[in-house]
Length: 128
Image 1 (tube, rainbow, N blue to C red):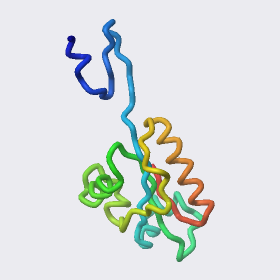
Image 2 (image 1 turned 45 degrees about the horizontal axis):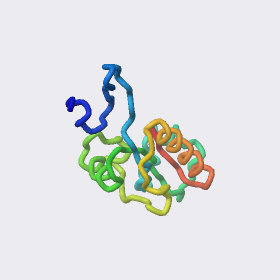
Image 3 (image 1 turned 90 degrees about the horizontal axis):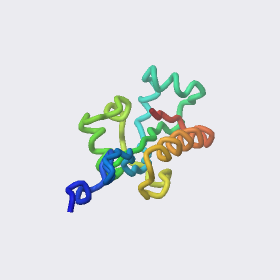
């Protein structure tokens, strides 16, 4: 059997014809609560011009890892968003959608939509 049929799907798969088919890794969407001091960050303040003292600050992201693994990376500074590395506190499971892996393109769309929804609900949100 050809080796390309034995390999797990990665960023791309090679068909028997030799044609490369691009696929995307499945991702989950996660929400991290930030310390209120995050509101002093200039980029965060620009993203949340209507921030009012007392509003909960959040970060919304997506990852091919579990939410717990990704949070750990942020806090260790590995591929971290600076805002989470500096101000990350805890995962907000109550605000996360179901942790069912979805295609990357869909995850990025849902991530942006969740950030907008959370802002409408009164949260201050960073999302990149």
